Amino acid sequence: MKKYNILSASFVLSLIWIGVLQFTDIQDVSYLFPLLIFIDVTSMAMLMIGVTMFFEKQEGVIKTLLISPISKGEYIISKTCANIISNLITLVIIYFYAKLFKEIHVKLIPLLGFVILIAFFHSMIGFVLTYYSRDFTELLIGMIKYSFILMIPVLLEQVGLIKNEFIKKLFYMLPTKAALVLLQSCVGGIKNWESVFSTLYLLIISILLYFFIHKKFDEFAIKESGV
Image (cartoon, rainbow, N blue to C red; front, side, top):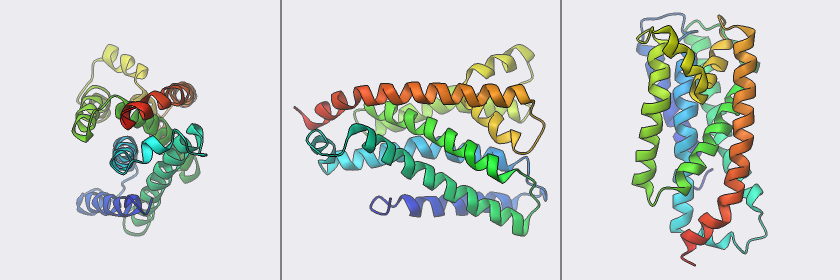
């Protein structure tokens, strides 16, 4: 984490979110808070996986993993855990800022658990995007496509710009909708079935993605090593 300045990135991003909270006219930021965490945990989890793996590619680390005593699973989990820690740091910093200087009413313990799950899922997405990107620019393009297709529509629906009931129901098929539902449930106004469905949905597809990433890792490492 220190080598690739992941902790530094967490602190910088925390300052950005603190600035958003500071300059908003809203005193009670309970309903704004999940939106900030949603943007942070989804985008940064994907980006950090790509950043670290492309750095390691340049340093020749990826090809050494083929003969390294570190298993594929250990490598994948270590990268994912670094992401999760980064997201949790950001969450804790802006939460305590909101507690001290604003009003906030969220269930912190469930929120921590949901952030771990969402960060895990989007770390898996980060691996998939990295596997199919030739360079960092292509990775960013993939992230932008993901954001436009899966993130922005959910945010627009959340702020009331999408009101069609049929479309809103279709959004439950999106993992980003499940992520936002879980974060919102820590504030209130979410039905129990929505929370249960969203938790199971993200958990199942996260596990499936992990096995896919694990299976494809050797293929990726061989491609990147030029063998």
